[in-house]
Length: 376
Image 1: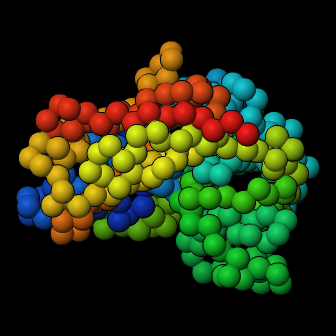
Image 2: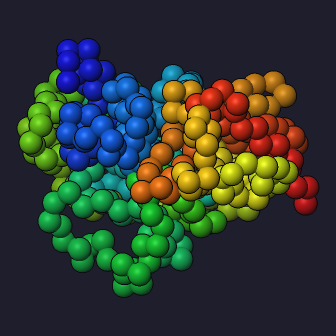
């Protein structure tokens, strides 16, 4: 990794938390994989870093919302028109929850945005004066569980050994953890002695929950300037090095969602010409309140020279007024079978009744899929 790549890598880490394995991948993928055996091909290190980073966001993950949700999202997620359009159309819960105090630290849920694919939760902490230092720029919760009223585990993280008797509701077991999730977390926003930050959690399909419950037993107050993303160190080792205060307690937060969240509906689009190309395209495209996803596969035996999907240019969805780009894409090859997964910045709020989905090909003869909304 050269100096410029390292600068990029460090810059990405300023806003998005990446696991050690992902960091190692960013450094080593292109150096260690034989050219003909790469599963992710034709990516520059910049694109690979961004792709892996968003696999952690959206692949795993949380970015700070702060008090002015719209303003902060505009700054931190200006790349994602889907989430921005959802916020601008009031698809976000903004009534703070009741605070819970433990170890002289008051914690509460500031706001929630939830649809089938995204769960964005903003947390706030009111700290005693001795902890509210100017150099605290990050709050880490090493052990956390998030679940709903049906005891569905929506997200959990355990970075160290913990007393599971605190976390384990008798009704909760590993069988409830049926939602494959990942998340990211961002820097804390300071307002006096109140610090706010957020998780952005990604899933293939969240339930229509009515209540969000969060439990954790420790918070770490981290000096951002002391964080050193040294290869070979675990996430916990890095955090411990930079942590100024470890505060133990028991916080059990609850947030009741409104009808706009638990009665949410997606848009379904018919792909009118899905069979016009030698690719296994789905018959429909689902658009949620924050994004849309397209998955397809194809047999390379059926693809002529130059007809393969291009990774030098991005797929996009053309609406009446805008070109909606991807936030993430995945291309995997297993022998002659290719698998593609695209995540678009298209939500129900910035979509039209008819649109075009354009997938570039190496020969320049791009795939154009016609999308028509199925009215209910």
